[in-house]
Structure formats: C-alpha cells, structure tokens
Image (tube, rainbow, N blue to C red):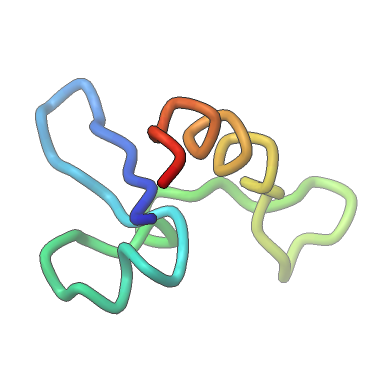
Length: 59
C-alpha cells in the first residue's frame, strides 16, 4: 500500500517504497528535516508511515 503525505500547500509526497515506486509523488526527503543527533541523516519517518498504514483498509 502506498503511504503519502499531503503538505499544507497541497503537494503530495511519497513516504514508503510503494508510493515512491509509483512515480506519481514527490520524494519526502526534499522536505524531510535533518536528525539533530546525526546531522547527515534525516529524521525518522517510521512512525508517520505506521500511522498512515493504519488508515489503509486491509485486503
């Protein structure tokens, strides 16, 4: 299941591989903040993906 994030400006970003692989959404890393404890890395979006998956109907 594709998990996406819609920013306040209406632009939709891919949060997981399924969404990224579809080619329809912008990559989230373009707006993802750096991890302050590990500056080269980006903040963990795992919890956001988990919450998004909970909203998806199970097949």
